[in-house]
Image (cartoon, helix red, strand yellow):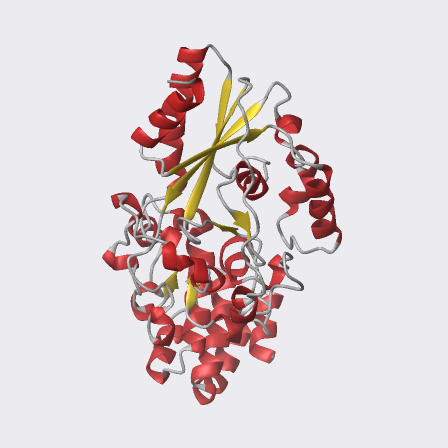
Length: 367
């Protein structure tokens, strides 16, 4: 068996669903695209994208000895329609990828086993990455032939549709590269048209500042008021542009138990989530990617969903958070209560405004 054949066989045996190889270089136009993204300010709060842009331009900028990148994919296809709960206004929607264990932990363990095997068997140096290093995984995956970047900028696979987690092993081995995948989007623009917040200025461009995934995960402060009503009941991430892709007709449900949805994270009741304290939050989201955003940001998201629910019964749940210790939560609670029960909010305004010292929360009361 060839060296490449041995690597493929080992990777598939470890539970990876796709294996491709590309060189440890990216063309200059990829770096230029990144520069344009940053110049427009589309990164929002994600200052680390600017700080690490030089190393992101190409894998060999991050690690000069690298010669090849082994790109690996793991199928996380959901068992049902990810958008089915959009109409259940008393429930929250968590992105498919975060409904069970943190994929970073699951995949990194396998990558380390594979990398150690490669290092020992072929006497090479190796490094492993799961989208936490300054590397552009999606362009690399496209060059390796795992799929292509759709008009929504995400990877699309002919075999797995929208649902591939990516990992990589960089190595000093010089391996033959696989051909890149052609773009098969054609004239379709379903992913662009479905976006609730109109986050795509043009095909192949995304303004993260308007993206619900960014707003619910990366954004640390109050969500802009004009975008809150557009978020619906999405409380962690957003799958809309992924879920409507026609190539999902070829997708299959994941066989990985760690990625199948936990019952308590599948359309959870907003009323149950809004009262989580820090300890409860950490317990519920143990081993989950959601834990990294912290309790306060998560409850902010839940309160926005409550405000969008149109369910007056949830006004009481929002009112309970008016005195929360976190200003971020208090501000979201004010907004939610004013949406669901403006008369009650008006009665409580004087009481809470008199005690409020944080300008951002005072602005919510006065808006």
